Length: 324
Ligand code: DP6
Image (cartoon, rainbow, N blue to C red; front, side):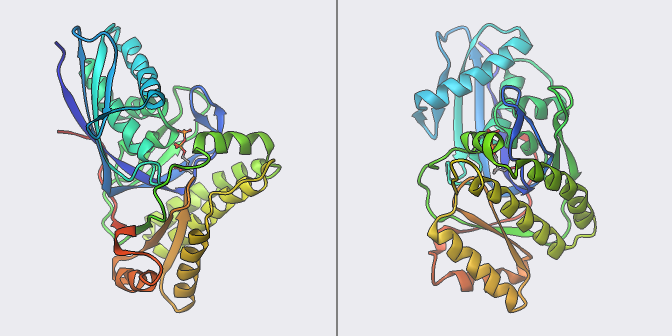
């Protein structure tokens, strides 16, 4: 019986978004992206390869995973089996401390944790770069969750040169995110399908790639300067430019819901009143507010008439992958 390994990976929120794949099979993106890993949302995954099993056994928060998830995770385990020359099935237990499919990117922490626990359980000793490359094969955003703090996924052109690098692993300045969980319904259009449609049909897509690439050095400079206003402005721009590609797709679609605009409006009003706060959004209706901790009470108070306390989750920069 193989060794049982547990890994923890935290989710991340992109400040400069990843949106579109030049190679869908290998998950090579058209543009580089840059994210912040969060402390509060993470996944713990335990993997054990065993001669006793006749199929992969995959559970989520104590229940057997649905067929689609199991199939995707088995395909990912195949990559590990191939790399390790290990012809054994695995038992995988995942505990998600992330609201599932609510736009808080549980696939990022999920595949980063599975890559870490799975590769070690299979006897592979991957360095962080190779772990990042492996996680990428599960979900693009997982590429970045190997590291803590601010992380850049350098797009590259192939399996070998598309991986994440740390930009600032220890964040010693005041920046945080308030995640506004508007609803935890499953996404109507998964990010994978959404980005594929956009790449194929939006006339704005080439402009997206160009602006996203140009935003990366600007964001890195803002992080080095610890300039929360510039980080926030650039993040907000990147998010809205990404969402503009969905509105311009054929047929058009959007991840916005009425409550999304409500949340954005609160942020805009606060800013007019001199409060430093900025919004970002992923492939779902939830809004994340970027701010410094001293502004948090005022922002939470302004959101309180519209959202319940359970819908407002405050997170700070978090760490990279660890083993339990
Ligand atoms: C909008 O990483 O979920 O959150 O690679 O198809 O698994 P796949 O997509 P995924 O997409 C994330 C898109 C995003 C932006 C981001 O996290 O950079």
